[in-house]
Image (cartoon, rainbow, N blue to C red; front, side):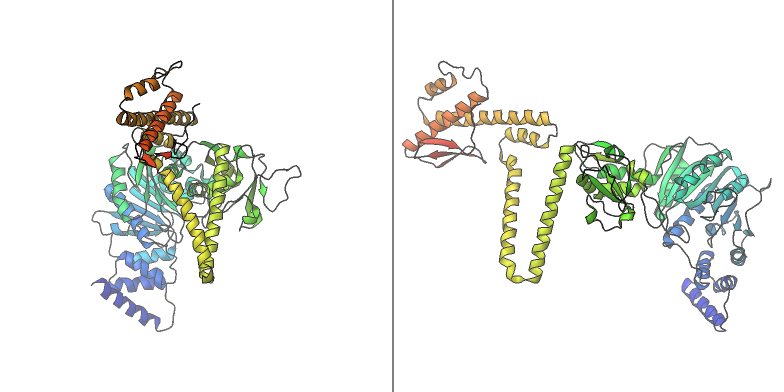
Length: 592
């Protein structure tokens, strides 16, 4: 029977049963699904749908990927005995029930769900029980999948189900795997800090930590994690991220192969005592990519405060406060940071007011930095909360930022403010065009003026491309250098080489235009009473350039071959003035 026929038959059975007006339970729905010919996974989906208990995850594909992952682990271990403890209406090892030679034991927290499973697994070798299995000498499982309830605390638990994991630990074989499916908070929550060390004392050592994207856990959209334990103590552990079914095979293969140095796109190996997850590695990698280029140092926000006293923005300022260096940071990670409370859209009681040391940092620069993709990602990395991401004050003050020197901060803040003014101006011009076409001429003139300024700036920025070699190389080195001393030395080198170049151009023109050029050049190269080419400093080359070019202009004027412009490079020229009978370069070079 194909799926479409099975679904039609199921709807007919459900409609017939519902025609009497009575409410039927999950066991009856499971019986109808089984009679219709649906497999176990499809039947469980139908049970949730028709029983009105469909609190399923936001992404069924992720749920299926998680089931595929745990089944792949069990198959990879050639498990003959598999146990699953579930606190929800999912059966993640459903794909193993038809595997020959596998003995599946399912323990459910919910008695009615156990009855549903008894109906659906009637023709398999799987057994279904209610509650947590009691350890016994012969109760040893090669693979254990534990999905305990999240948020419930019993028997000294941490709210993530560690007490259930501890209870199942004695049933794990010496070379088996235990997979704990829970919320990611178990890795960062203060109340769960002792959970992993306590399990290690109980003989369970972490072999892998797999991040689960929101939607993989039943009934919630929070991020999850799957922690794989072994009996043997581990020197390294695998970290990975499960975001789809295509990630299952490479992660399972990596766990089977063992530690390697080179990471992949979905997994990496870390030392066993490294507390980072794969999501942390991705966060660090993205931060390195987003960090602004340029000279900076990493500084905590705490180090830039005038005082560590941080209060909410609705509280009055301290009596001894005399400055204006304030920074307003909302506790919500996605909200905008400002240097002015009037610019905030968040209620003052939800805003941290930080008093910044004006000698250490510019508040407007810090606001711009924290609102950039770099700053937003940093804030999201220290935020917590299942629905609304909030940043705690201690985490905020300990946050490290890439901060340049104060002068650079001031310049960035001014430029950012100017950009804001330009954006506001463009917005006003656009609004004018949308509401009043009579103002078209004025708007067009303003736009043309701005375009002209931008064109001049572009031509200046591209000026070096018109320079001859090696001047272009030297000037480009000056542009890309970030060290002040190196920039100054390179610029002086550029001026000196430009003077040499102008002198060479002028001398070559004199040689071409004058028959007595040897005498003229000898007089210029070895002037009487002063040092000549032997000194060859900046002043000498400027003097030679000026004399030779001026002489060239006079010769061309007297022979009737007057050229208002004598090109000397593609970007510069020498202009002859017939009134004063002198030549003037388009750049003034003065002897020092």
